[in-house]
Amino acid sequence: MKKFENLSANINNPKWENIIQRNSPLYSRENDFRTDFERDYTRIIHSAAFRRLKHKTQVFFSPENDHICTRIEHVMHVESISYTIANYLGLNTQLTKAISVSHDLGHSPFGHSGEKILSKISEQDLGYPFWHEKNGLDFVDSIELLEDNQKYLQNLNITYGVRDGIISHCGEIDENGLKPRKEYIDLSKYSYPNEYAPYTWEACVVKISDKISYVGRDIEDAITLGIIDDHLDDLYKLINNADVKNEINNTIIINYLISDLCKNSSPEKGLCFSDEAFLLLNKVKQFNYDNIYNSNRLLPSIKYFELIISEIYNVLKNTYDGNNTLNNLNLLYKSFPKLSKSFISFINNYYDFGNRKNLRLKNKVIFDINNPHDYYKCILYYISGMTDNFAIEIYNEIISF
Image 1 (cartoon, helix red, strand yellow):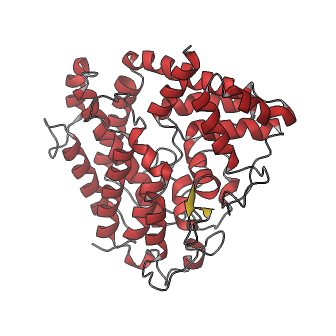
Image 2: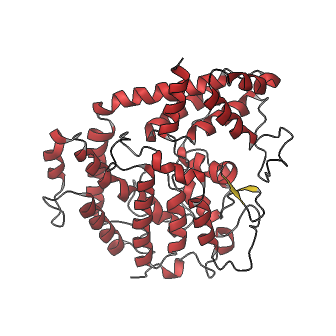
Image 3: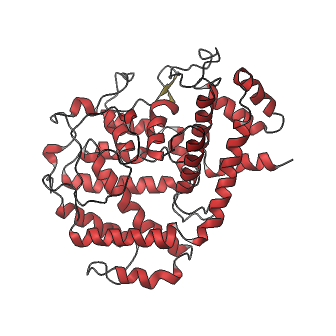
């Protein structure tokens, strides 16, 4: 127990000044007794992007079923799991909490299916893929806005340690023994998922907790929806460890994997499972890919998602006309008032129309909508922030007369 205490993200860690670094100093209050990571945590959970996670698909699009996991539930599961592991190992639980609640802020509507659709569009029009980890970093750095103590809107401006945890949570755990990288890097230079290991042990814990969280819960939801009824016998055959034999539910899988990880991890070996548990984790993940994520039952909904996202994107893309773009967006109001109003409101926060002082904005200007590349990128950010419900609402407005 507490085997990693000397490696925790604290003032004695040689990486400390890098870990708590912000793009600019946060405003301060005389009576604020929160730590840097506690301030990050509250800034994140007060953000609109965090609140929207409750209406974003995790794996299964089932908006009428209150018992199917949404993106926000997944995030809270990761927070719980990472807290348990970090607390046992002696790591900074405030940092793991902040990374956990923010790690999926960049997810699009409709889960990974929506992410793939946006990536296809991005590669076509911008020349590079869309991936939610990079989008999440962009959101906390440039998109999400909070009022400060003078009621001006500013970017979230969270610490390097949390920002690193967001973009570094990507990728599967293919090797048993995860350790943080030593180098302090410019996170905007990430060019593809899983390019670098996380910078802190805490971010490594969240990366593994993300995987522990979804393997069991996705099975539980699939059973609830009847998607794997014909494959349950195959699933039970995979469970050959005495601790979980003949039992399969989210609680048992999570407890087994957490316990095994905590027992087997060390600073020398890294965060690791026993060979037996690691094999089980990989077998269960493969089962999920074969029978859940690639199930024919999901194909109709994926086609629906592509229709929704592509249509919204194309309607907005077709308004681009250099200096006349804003005028075209205003004209769009006649046919699609909700789309026009919400997108113009979105752009207003990131492009200087000469009214920033009136809007009480102190964030960075990041777009020039007269530039097609910037304009298309702005549309992608706008769509990626949508909830499932809002995207469907906008699509229904587009197809209605």
